[in-house]
Length: 372
Ligand SMILES: *Cc1c(COP(=O)(O)O)cnc(C)c1O
Image 1 (tube, protein in one colour):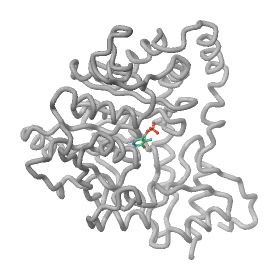
Image 2 (image 1 turned 90 degrees about the horizontal axis):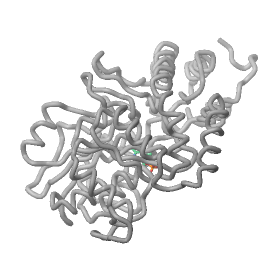
Image 3 (image 1 turned 45 degrees about the horizontal axis):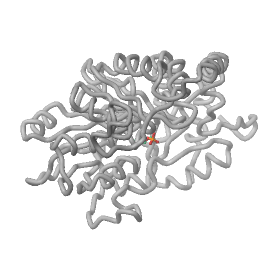
């Protein structure tokens, strides 16, 4: 039980060399294939990846784009082009999310209604939504890889005509009652930021949807507003995924099930080994909901002291996120969301990627000995 006489392994929060190491030969092969092809944009790798990702997501269409933020932004811009959203419309977004979810909405001129977090899941609390006649959309965030879906609440919102968008940046591969996240709402944004469960070697993202019209307009918007070269039907952007990232992601996507399995296993190890009564472990969902465990987030009343203690003992941690979005300087909204605000001061993400039972046992032992 005494950790001071054992060797202290340096466990960083995440080491991307470890993530990509086992695939290095195949990644290199894919990269060389693209480099030699002379085809770097709008080519066969992106096309094949889109088909593979749509299949994985259980959706009809996929548009590969530049980043997760752009995926969110293009969905909203797409709905604006279709006349389904307009400037000034209200969109509900959980305050406890990565800033990108907020940035996408404000960039499109939409009014963000910051929503409260659920005390149990840390995701959006569907029981506390504030609707007004101007509310036109909801962006649910499957935070930490946990499906944030309420069948009854979302059905009611849909019946009122709201668009439901999923921020699936952290939950690719998760499912809710046998349905994949990303296929639950009207459209979903995925991120392949390198540290995501399936990460590119650079920036990349994607939109998935069953809505043909939306997919067509997003593809156009992401490609300078043109379907045909030099025919610009709308004022678009350049938000394309490149061939190199697509080829690398085609190597990584087939590992998704294994990545998810190992992360779930690690979460179970933490559940078993952490016994410190002051540490609140993540609540478990029922059997029909599977998470991707993008993060394993614990809660502690003296979070900063716990983080410092772990760091001094060679264990890297992160905070997702230290400031709720509505309190960030770039928004500083005049609303009070006590749960989201309290969470920001108490949550701590433990290493979960590319480690195994021994490391988790070690980290848990340290946590159990923490008396700070
Ligand atoms: C990573 C992330 C994004 C943004 O993705 P990028 O590819 O980094 O732009 C958006 N939302 C959430 C919840 C994320 O975790």
